Amino acid sequence: MASAICTNELFPWHEKFSVGIPEIDTQHKGLIRLINDLHAAMTTGQGKQAVGKILDDLVGYTQVHFRSEEDLLRQKKYSKLANHQGEHKKLTAQVVELQEKYRGGRLMLTVEVMQFLKNWLADHIIGHDHQYAAEFKSK
Image 1 (cartoon, rainbow, N blue to C red):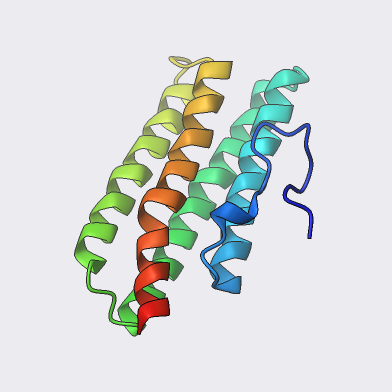
Image 2: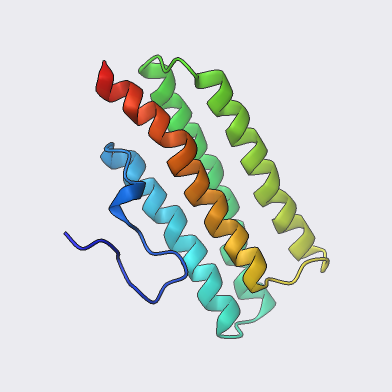
C-alpha cells in the first residue's frame, strides 16, 4: 500500500496516522481531505464563500468525528476517556475560533493557519489517538 494518498497535498495521509480501527481511520482521512480542500481553495484563490463553506464543513465534521470517537472509547472502556474528551473540547474550541474569526473578517487563511490545522490534527492523532489504539491492542 502506498504511504500517501497524494504527494502534492498539504497533508497527505500516511500509515503512521492509522489507529488500526477502520471507521476511525476513515474519519481521520475525511478530516485530512477537508484540510487539503481548504488549502486548495485558499491557494487557487477561490472566493470567501467557497473557503467559508469548506471551513464550516471542517468544523462540523470535526464535531461529528469526536462524538463518534468518544462513543467508541466509552464502549471499549478507555482508561483515559475523560482526558481525551478534554482534548477534544480544546481542539473543537480552536477550530470554531478560527471559523468565527474568518467569518468576522478577522482572519486571513495563510500558510501559517493551514500549517496550524495540519499540525493540530497530526499531533492529536499521533499524540492522543495512538494512546487508545495501544491500550486496545494490549487488551
